[in-house]
Image 1: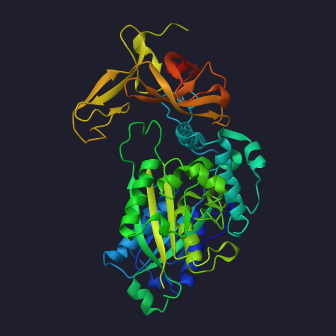
Image 2: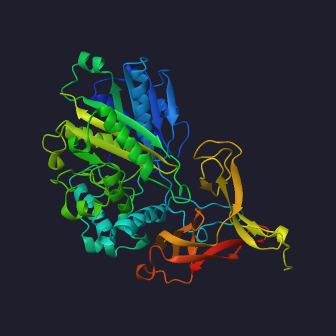
Image 3: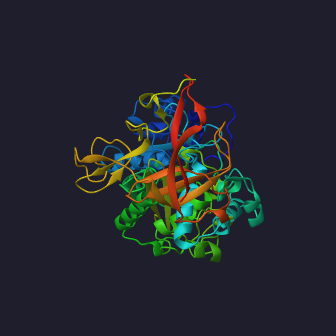
Length: 368
Length: 141
């Protein structure tokens, strides 16, 4: 994973190439060992082949993946399934993004823009409305949502790969420019460029290469999309797909939320993180506010969430995010996460959710 | 500018229709197999997959506030702040829209507050041909 930053005039394939080479070096393989490539970019087409032109055109099967904010996670899944299908032993998954600047989202245009008429289609507003649904049901407050941002910015001070390493006290978060109530500017994910890559191997191959001492095992991979809900898509539903993916992942892994040592979840906006505590079954319905109030999800807490700084402070280059969160889990499972290391971490859960809607959950385990 | 005839009046969403008397309304569809309600125009029912079961109906103009955001930063050219709202109508339809006639402050907005739909010109917006559009707005009921 590259440190997330604003790329100066380079294409996503350049960032992806650097991340891919780093991942291959770490796994002690070369492009000639890679038997299939899945590369994701949400904003650039043909990324797999553009990437191969940067790092080696070996003629292997490759595919470009685009799946909203689940792009990186989907590329990773496909790289894994290629091995499970028996077609290969070693594959490469890359997520890379050079982002359009400014506010994401876009209103319908049936002749004139519907923005400001049919509410707002901006992402901060859409996720504010999701958070306010929780507020209506459970009394969740602006301050509780803001505390998510305080926590994740705090965590990022321990992560040199986050774009920001800066504390943001509660008053600063709540007093920042209001974008879409209750999301202030500091409660919106950071628009940055970046890339992350993963070398995926069969267990047999990892053993053959003597890599089991730092290998990370995929206990479960689950992807769910947009089951019908009465208000969706008038009101985008980020909850149902997340719950489905999480439940399938726990079932496949034969594990439950209490077995998880750390979580990287999709905090695209501070309002979203609290919803996902419940969607990922880290607490019961209506208990997310208490979780953030009591510090259960902060570093050193019962179940630390977004130790990387999350999308709020590490940054959110769309396609890179789904692999970057697997990278964060892997650092902890290998015991190399430095100051933010979860002591003795064995199981990690990574989650992304993109509008449309699609959600991916991966459960990773320390291999030995 | 001459007054447009009913047939020529344009709307900001495909589900906003103009009837023969020139009255605007929202057209929703209900599945006769599973009762799901949509405002889009799917080929089959997105809830149960049944075909040829989506029956159009004229949506209620009354409902309650389900959720909202107060939007301060929007896309270029859009006046802020405004209340972006998710409104559950009495008949199972959910619409997104703007609430007017309520101060854009959290203390002035109550979840579940009753709202009614009003149709009006789309804030003076014109398309490239200079034509005006009709939108719906929500107001306290």
